[in-house]
Amino acid sequence: MRIGGFVPFTSIDYPGELAAVVFCQGCPWRCGYCHNPHLLPARGSELLDWRALLKILEQRRGLLDAVVFSGGEPTLQGSLPEAMRQVKALGFKVGLHTAGCYPRRLERLLPLVDWVGLDIKDLPPHYPALTGVPGSGERAWKGLELVCASGIPFEVRTTLGPHLPEERLSQIETVLKEKRVPRHRLQPLNPLPATGEGPPPGGGKQR
Ligand code: SF4
Image 1 (tube, rainbow, N blue to C red):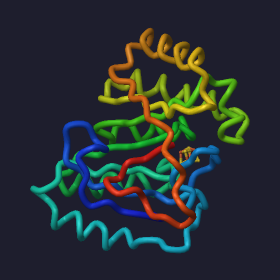
Image 2 (cartoon, protein in one colour):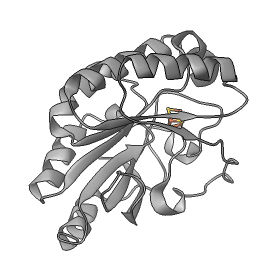
Image 3 (cartoon, rainbow, N blue to C red):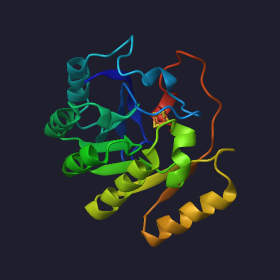
């Protein structure tokens, strides 16, 4: 695993559970408001050692409930399923923050996951203006279909800002209600961090 950051303790990144957050390096999208720009290149300059992190997690058995894989985009990395299995073998629940960049990989990962935080950034046609990637909206919304069908607890998160007019937000909310999405969290657009800043304290993530 290529790990760009680690938060050893948070109560806000996995609802109702005390968790550690592993920030996975790399994301194929380039959202203008991304709060973790240092995590976007597939190969970061200051990576943490996964085996060392596993040792730290091992020492926290009984103190933490869950480990959340965030990013970046965790599903970018082919070694994520094995990392999730290792975390589960230590007795932790597995959380996943994803923007749905890779729906097929997400589908294969879901049996390993106990909770998902999925970003739905906009209606599909408006994604490329935000992410810079054609077809990204269809991918994210396919991810939503998969998560809805999985029966796994999840929430959908949407970042507010000038890129998302109220009318479109309301259309998104309508569709999510139709799909019986259990929880839709609206995240305010925070000021971007200075270049090189690490993951935000507490592990909060703005995608
Ligand atoms: S906001 Fe999320 S999906 Fe967008 S570039 Fe940043 S990490 Fe990638």
